[in-house]
Structure formats: C-alpha cells, structure tokens
Length: 256
Length: 220
View 1 (tube, each protein chain N blue to C red):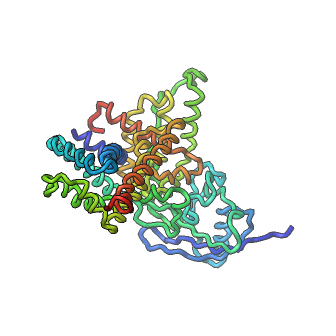
View 2 (view 1 turned 120 degrees about the horizontal axis):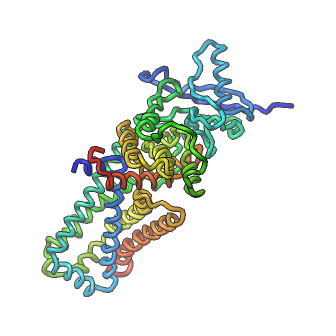
View 3 (view 1 turned 180 degrees about the vertical axis):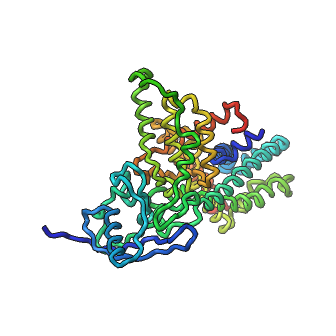
C-alpha cells in the first residue's frame, strides 16, 4: 500500500506564557490524509522533541468529540472548516497538498492564552457554578417515569444538553459572547420539571457572572450556531432571553 | 429602581433596549414613508398633508421628543455595545473566518448604523430644519422645496445610497429584534425573516423612489 502524504505549511501560534508576546511559527509537514488534526500536531511535536525543541502546547482528552477539551481556531474557524465536529474529529483529508493551515488559540478577553494554543476556559465553569445545576436531596433512587415529560420537551432539553462546553461559540462570535453556551446550560434545566425550583435565580445568576467575566454581548450574527460542534441552536439564545426577561420582571428579588 | 437599571444594563438588557427602540423606529419609518409617498399625489396634496401636521404642532413636538429619545437610546446603546464587544476580544484572529459562519449584514450593524446617523444629521439639518424653522412655514410650499432639494444630483445620490444602507441595517435588525425578545420558533421565525427582508426592501425602494422621481421626471 502506497501512502499518499500531503505536504502542508502549518502556521502555529506560539506563546510561552500568558504575559509574553506570541507569534506564528511555520512548520512544514508531510502527513497522511488519514491522520487526525491532533495527530498531525502530535507528529510536529515528535519532530520538535527529537530536535530538543519545546513542543506545541495544546489541549485534548477524549479525542472522540465528546469532552470539549480540544479547541483550536483553524483557518479562522473554531474546530476547523467542517461543521458539527470538534477539532479532534477533523481529519487531514479535508486539506489539500500545498495548503497553508493557520492554527490559533480561541481568542477572547475571558479566555486568556496560557501557553501556545491552550486558553484559560474556567470562566465557563464559573458560569455553571453560578446556577447551572439543580439542588436535590439525596435518597433512594427515584422511580423511573415518576415525573411525566413529553417527548418534545425532553428532546429539546437533550439537544441543549448536548453542549460540551468547548467554548467554540465564544471563539466564533465577533463579540466573544458566551450566550450560546449559557443559553444551552439554562435551557436544559429550564425545560425540565427538575429545573423549576431554581429557574428564576439560575438565569439571573448565570447571566450576571457571564457579564462580569467580560464576555461580549450577543448581536445575533448566529456564527456560534454555525461553528458549534454539537449544532446547538440559537433558539436556545431566544429561550435564554425570554427566561431572563421574565425572571427580571417576575422575580421579587430586587438585588438580582 | 436599581433593579431596572441593572436589568437594562446587563448584556441581555442592552439587547432588549436595542430591540424595543429598533421596533419603534421600524414603525416610525412606516409612518414617515406614508407621509412621503403623498408627494406622488402632487404639490397640493403633499402641502396640505404637511400643513395639517403643522396645525397640530404641539402634538407633533411631543412625538418628536419621544422619537428623539428613542433614537438617542438606540444610538447610545448601539455604540456602547460595539465598544464593549470590541474590548471582549482584545487580540484579533490572524485569519478572519467570519464570512464562513455569518452574514456580512449581521456583522456590519455599527457601520451601516453610523452611515444612517450621518444621513440623519444631514436630513434633520436640511428637511426638518427647513420645514419647521424657515419661511416655508408661511408659504407652505413644501413640495416645491423638496423638488428643489432633489434636483441636486449629489444630494439625491447620497439620499439613495443612505436608503439602501438603511435597508441593509433593517434586514438584520428586524429579525434580530424578534430573536432578542425570545420569539424564535420553527413555525414563525422563517416568516419573520421573510417579512423583515420584504420590509427592508420596501423601505429602501420606496424612500429612494422619491429622489429618483424628482431627478428623472418631477424636476420640472
């Protein structure tokens, strides 16, 4: 079997630490079209390590598109040119021999670069900690189907729950807004009976923390939906807006 | 009332202000257009219409103040959002892939809005100023004044370009307002988008038809 390798010029953002100045470094690589994008970076790193040079720092964990750890902006698009996949699911067959590939970290004020392609995404965790949960008393296992939920509602909630929290919506948005992420996390609970007790303060607190962390405001360009590896719909943003407006009008809490 | 101030200053609150004021301006444009189109009925009709507005001046003034406030809130919030959103991404991407995931019109609201603002200032300093604070007040020859203004090719072309850009701005703004209110639904949202498109085309074409009319036919 002959291997048709493709030759690429890969321009990777290198930045030693948060406060140092970064720049693009060129790497020439001959890579199998069957390898994944992260494997291609692994190959570059193997070469770098052989030469005793600092390997490119990037994040990855499951490498099967479910953990949301890997996130790179490839040729200007978060998770690369193919819709509804994470960076780890992108394969080199989607590039042509002789292509130049730009690899950048997610850019946002709330996502500071830690090293090379790794960004600090704990802001998303802080938003979850502000209300993206339900409080339940532990006890014996509840009966299945004790609470009836229609197929439509459970599907909508599950669609929202598909969000893997990778931050591609923030990276794609021209305003670095986290609205799609927050809307998915609010929606998955607001739709279900279990989410009702904390429904009002959840949306108020999560939006408050989102604003405090320096994410931008949504201007409805819908770039987030186009780049989301899980295809989270902007209808969730509409639901978030609705939830927030109603919560602020109805809630008796004037401190929120 | 701190809660209200805080709500309106949150990221979603600012969007809501943009949407409410935007919808108000969308409705205002319909009224304005209806008035303008009476120009096609000839000098006497148009002059009578404007004169009748003149006779209810105190009422018109109140509406104008409300309208000015709506414009100010829309412009102030728009500029503020644009500035804050710029700050939210201090380092830009080396490769800008935005054309692959969003429409040009949705990304250029601040630019189209700025051009409309320039138009607004010029429009107020010419037409509004002339209709309210000059001798036109006595002669009531509003139609003749309008015809004279649009006989200037440069002014007319500027007016037409501004109206096309207004159409671009409205095309995104219309559906964006509905999304902001949370009215995005599989059944109605495609209808909202189509309606917004038709509305923005109507505004651009109908407002532009007046300078075109005076340039081509109505000049003399």
